[in-house]
Image (cartoon, rainbow, N blue to C red; front, top):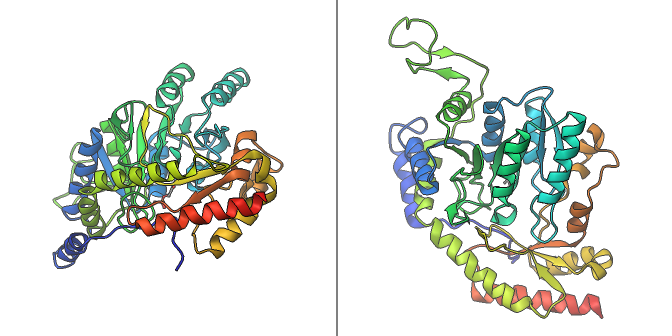
Length: 390
Ligand SMILES: *Cc1c(COP(=O)(O)O)cnc(C)c1O
């Protein structure tokens, strides 16, 4: 059987709490969602959290709450899932990409600086930057925060890979260097709610706005309504929102998974350290994990050496999959997608992103990998590399 690149870990107590909700009066809009929000915001040391039905929805709400709309520009990383860029388009804004550092796969601060200086000269600075913490390793947020002050843009961390990680000893999600941080709870991520996401922030105003937009733009809060209530039934729709709500079944699962978050990330570190030790003599290089970050290690990506990558990347993938190792590629540069090619990115290319795309391979990484699985993966890599290098 194929060893997948990622898989959820569901315990008996995870199942029990979901069942409990199913027997309760509230399948949605009950007590579990606010309790899950409190659990995540407390863990991160942030003031507020707004849970949603996906990280994509949370990123969309984050953009809207920061006022992104037609005429605005949002910048993100090309080496990410398409949602990081799509959310800007949902708002009617334009999107552009900042090149990455191949060593980490994260946004390059040098490239960002240069692009900002150019954009300041030509008068098309971004309104929002969405840095992506690839594999769960934080971007250089201190530099990003200082550039955001200098050039006047807002920051949404796409931390879909990074719950349970730290940056400068603070939990990712503390929002010390950003306006909003978003996590994903898709089953391949660090913890899961089936589908689900959350936006955390230290701004009460942004939290109120995201909470309202999550549920149709409707409020019942006396402080928010504009007219005198007609009666106890009264609510007002103040703007055009969505139904992006999380259910109580999902939130209960999330609360239960939060209890094992640190354990999950610890296990991922044990696996990564073992992989690191196995690959020192091979012609592959794991992505670097800078010392200022404690990675959540959502993914373990290795880069083929540039000398052999061009000829053998495809072949290495094929052979590993034949050997039942579920390797994957995170990610195809977003601007290469046909939709983006057809919408302004024809012929567009960034050097770092292209180099990364030619060399990257995600190998299996999840807490449930057995010692035997790990040996299988390492053996397969050793044998495939000696085959293609012969
Ligand atoms: C998974 C992921 C998303 C989207 O998350 P969903 O919860 O599936 O909507 C966005 N950005 C990145 C980097 C992701 O990995």
